[in-house]
Length: 137
Image 1 (cartoon, rainbow, N blue to C red):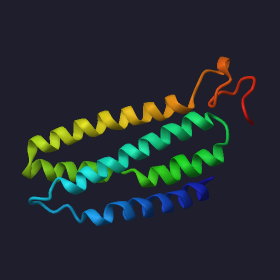
Image 2: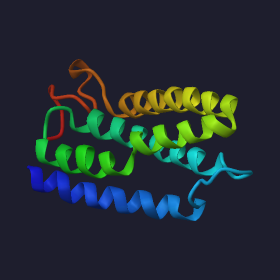
Image 3: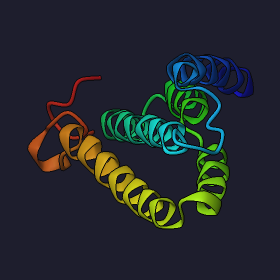
């Protein structure tokens, strides 16, 4: 399973870098907010995608969850870069940094909940995320 997580992580990190590369290095100055905002966007999209993966797979298909959820999406999203970028932004634009941090957490939670809600339903309904009667195996 570790090999799947590592392989997925390589793909996720490469995808994140492809998405963020056009936004530069995030050096202090006029464009200080661009890279942190782009990182926030990546994290929100990744949170939504992880909500879909978890809602759809539930406890089934642990290898797919490890590869996609922990590997690809774990590599795609980045808390550490978000934290460092926000700390750097705090030095030059404190209110923007505080707002960015709050909005990022709120949007990430909302996106994850939406992904779960769109793909997960109770076993009684036999919906997409259910293991109950009528669930696709």
